[in-house]
Length: 158
Image (cartoon, rainbow, N blue to C red; front, side, top):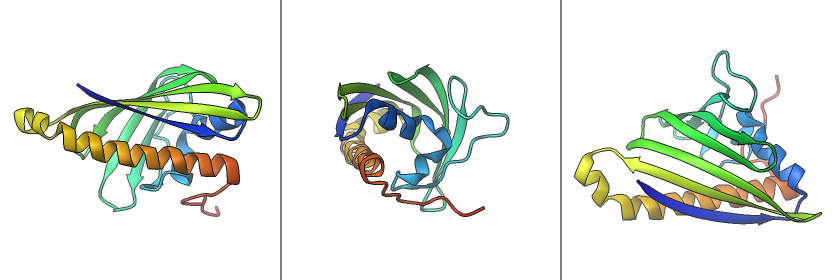
């Protein structure tokens, strides 16, 4: 299993940073590659067992995710349990830390096992590089969302 870690400091109280990630079906609002993230049928809004499908802007790629670890304002663990990308297994752990009353940090750990056996293992360095770039971009976009209200894909009017 491969793993990579990225961090982002956010100029906002911990509760605000946490709230942006805890709204489980709203990741599309700041994730540059996802334009929809609805909850799956019968899912809770957040917390253990909450499930969503992340639909990518390319109109083809999707990830189904489930919260498998949850401690408010401390951490969320998300299992990617179905996807049409070359991942056999993947999970994301988000750890949150208050640095001061007005500054917080999020640390993202991404663990994955690629599909395709030996070929997949040979691709790990390239995959890690691409994932690191994408995840750092996601954390930066989240910081911009929390600090400045910048939405990548604003909520559609009902």
